[in-house]
Length: 106
Figure 1 (tube, one colour):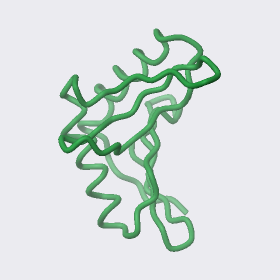
Figure 2 (figure 1 turned 90 degrees about the vertical axis):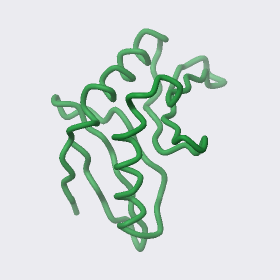
Figure 3 (figure 1 turned 30 degrees about the horizontal axis):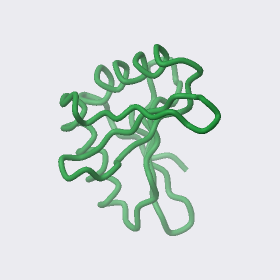
């Protein structure tokens, strides 16, 4: 499920797995419509392997970004201790995002 939240005058979203764990977070968007477009972009782009970019942080932890076809980052994962955890996260996005519902939360 995607949770769409308003923070001040901006919007952002998270994708949660069936166990409630956050597997992907968005940037801040100026409008609700822009955030909804971001969700739709994740749903479309998560099927493309080249949409996922794994990175290693300075502390050695692994995370991944989901990019749109124009290369813009539309979602970022949490930090994982190992590459295998990040790969599992990518698979979870691929599995959960396409048919996920959107829930607005306070």
